[in-house]
Length: 154
Image 1 (cartoon, helix red, strand yellow):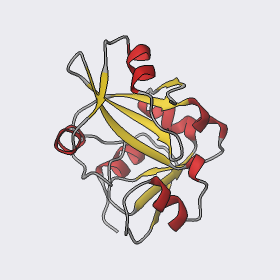
Image 2 (tube, helix red, strand yellow; image 1 turned 30 degrees about the vertical axis):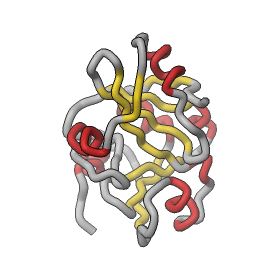
Image 3 (spheres, one colour; image 1 turned 180 degrees about the vertical axis):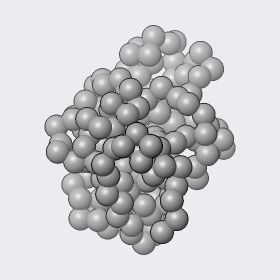
């Protein structure tokens, strides 16, 4: 297994994590959760969002919850927010869509974490490559990324 920028980031920060790989047939948290027999509520999808102040942020959302762009814009104190295009997401993160991790991104971005993720002992988050999930404590994820915790659900 090749080491990704996300894995290097986690090792550098001395964050305990476990990598599990699966055969990616469909990208998305639902497929990853099913393939790894993990609850969808504790599987993170990492979304790249463009804010109206011309910045990009990452939103770590549970697999079963839709991001409210309105709630995010309000929390970030900007006029509006929109989902980044595939090209923007890949340029900002250095990862391919379907393999975007909040760790070790090409450009440093603020990270938002949906509050319900802190209810779990462990969560799964992309490890920086399609079909590669890192499992860790959600508090470690929050602390390592200095993530802001909010209710970002629709």
